[in-house]
Length: 301
Image (cartoon, rainbow, N blue to C red; front, side, top):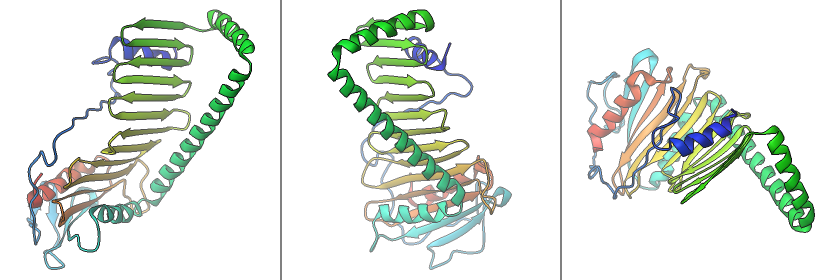
């Protein structure tokens, strides 16, 4: 059985708990009120303990208590920054840190940009082809009817076909194509490509190109992946800043980095506390968790 048909049957028969193999992906989302985790603190100087989790402080606080540097396992580096929002917005601060960190893994950043551009080009080409097909369909209804009859005959002779219809449910699958409609879920698969809409998430995958993207409708989650590289952004709802950025790759950068990223939090109007991470292991050896703990210590969750 081809993959799209398997996806279809899994979606229908085990939407809640099935198709959950060893390499599965689970996505959950919940909407909460602004600042549901508590009010973030306004701080003037950083708290920089000598040790926290797997991190050990290097020297003392710098720049008037606004910068602290830490070392972690296998040469990992963490820097804690206190950034005031004077002539720069919170989004501007995060873009600046993201550019700084992604520059430490230039090959990975370039590869992900290229794969995203290629995916957009393929989508544009697909859209143009669909539009052309639609024009031909409208121009020659008789030929379409003949083509439909011929496709039906071909399907019965060469392809496995599944058709299911019920209240709130529509399934059509044949060979490498599948289309599923359920309340809150739609799946379209064609050969190596698949598009899934589930809740507020949009998932697009291209197995031939080795790319995948996950995006939420409110822009709170964005994931771009290509081969062994991935770029992840999350942003909690609300006026306060609660954001995470992560860039990972199995292939190390010139300096050995396989993971860079930041955790940023701060109240409306700032200041923002940002912990930047550079690690030579993709699982970060607990470095990212300890960096988040540093941020929590200073401004809260």
